[in-house]
Image (cartoon, rainbow, N blue to C red; front, side, top):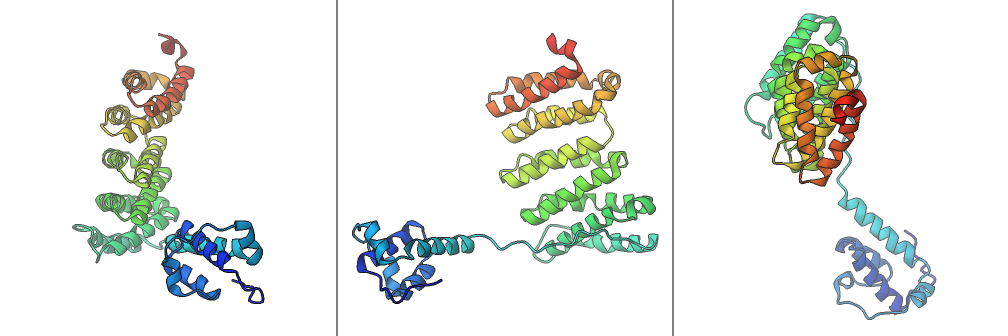
Length: 313
C-alpha cells in the first residue's frame, strides 16, 4: 500500500479516514496499522466519533484516501473469508486384481464403525474420496461383483458421512452417491430404498447447503435407477413433510420421473404410479406455501404434455 509521505494528510482527512474505517467495519488491528502509517496512534482506531468533515476537502488533502479505505475493506473481507479448501485429486483409481480391491474395502471398514469422532472423521473423508476415485476407475466394470459387495458393505458408512455436520465431508459423500447412481444405474436398485429414506431426510436440514445436497442426490437417483412405484411413494411422502424444503423439492423429483416415463407410459399407469403422481400434484398445488405451489406448477405442465387428456379433467 502506497502513502504519499511528501503530502501530509490534514487533520480533517485523518478524522474522516478513521470514520470510513469504522463504517467499513474494518478490524481494529488492520485499522491501527493503516492509521499508524499516516501518523495516528493505534488507539485512534477506536476513539469517539469524529466531527463531520468536508469530504471533498479531505480527498484533496489526501489523494489516496479512497484507495486506502477500499484496500482496508478488501483486507477485512479477505480475513473474514474462510480459507479455501485443499484441492483433492479426483483422477480415476485403477486396481490390478480382485484381491487388491478386497483389501481396499477391508481396510475402510473399521473407519466407519461407531460414531464420528476427532479420531476417525478424517479417515472417513479420505475413504469417501477414495471410493469416488475407484468408481471412476476400472473396478465397477472389471471387478463388478467385488466392487458391488464392497459398496453395499460400506453403504451405512457412506450415509454416516453424508449426514455429518462437517459440510465438506457430507458434500463429498453426497457426490459419491450421485456418482454411484450415474455409474451403476439399475445395478444400484437394491440399495435405492435405503439411500432414498436417508437423503429425503437430509433435504429437511436447516443448513441450506445440506438440504441442496440432499435434493441433488435424490434427483440423481431418480434419474438413473430402475422405475418402480416405490419411487413415487417416496415423492408422495416428501410432499406431505412438515418441512417446506422436501415439499418443494418433491415437485422436481416428480418432474424427473414423469420425463423418464415418456417412453413407457403404460407401465407407469398400470403400476399405480400415475394415479399417485396426480394425487401428489393436487396436494402440492393446494399447499399453503407459494414456493411449493410454484414448483409443482412446472411439474403439472410437464405432466400435461405427456397425458393431455387426463390433465384436462
